[in-house]
Length: 223
Figure 1 (cartoon, rainbow, N blue to C red):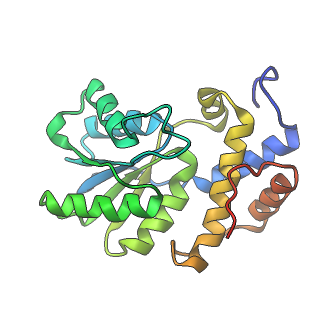
Figure 2: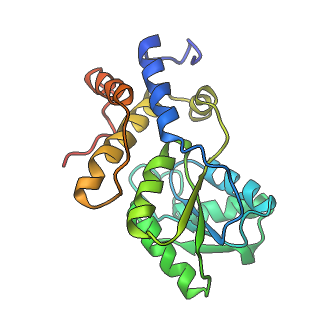
Figure 3: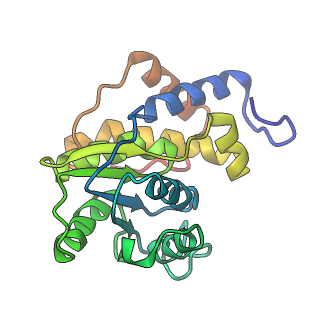
């Protein structure tokens, strides 16, 4: 449960958010892959997780992917991928193990543009470690399966519990909004051709609908 001093949600809403958090996590066991992609966002935890997985010998090369977005431009003025690279270098990942993709503005572009970067670098990937924010695992998986169906996808993220992740971000309301927004995309993107279909259990849908009705909607998109 979040620190009462920062909490802006009820216990029921917290439990609903935790259920959605658990759904978003794919539960894959990290294993060696041909390459990795670090999906750009506001969260440097992606670069931290990538560095740890590299040191564990799980991939020889990673593409950090991401340009700028309205939510990251102030924090990462040189672009998400550039800042991720700098952070990973500080954590011991060698420069020759890092490729950059600096134009992507959404998850689909993260995948398609990173695939081209790997191809140009001569990397033949038949398996891919997809490293993202914890609550983005399922959506990134579904997106990659749609856009790069021949590659085997293993999802990974920082090994944080929900409470710890909320504390790391420092804004419980924002985290719940992001969980809700990603679940909307998991539900809606398949019909738009952006991702493969993922089964969403009834209890998860119910939790999502309660949170939307309660106003956790700042990350919803209009279709």
